[in-house]
Image (cartoon, rainbow, N blue to C red; front, side):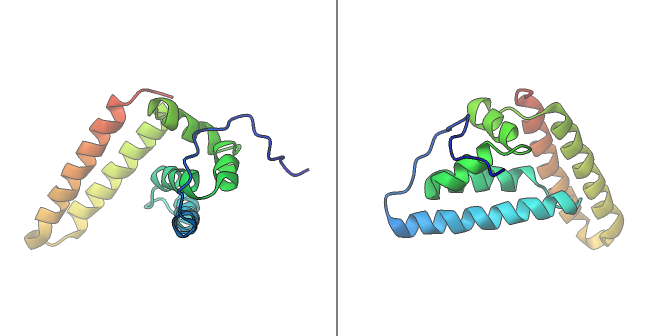
Length: 139
């Protein structure tokens, strides 16, 4: 049975006033959502940032898609927690840090010695992201 458009959570929809901007946000939301779904399948690509970006775009471009996403069985709670408190589930923090550590380690292993500075740059970004994640409240 299809889900009705009367959702339990309405969120904050701030649609763009210009129709061209609404279309742009709608399309960007679709692109980010697809990238998020790809991130579910590929361990080297993140899911959460793309799903959050798609929610932000759809909040400005399509009320229908936005309501569908924030009330989604799997993504909805994550988006609502982020919108309300900037909260991240503890398992997501652990998973993100483990994946960043593995990816960073692979960079150090695979880059030639003259390009090792790139791996250190990525490690610095990963460290910053990890600190940000662990300082955010648990969902």
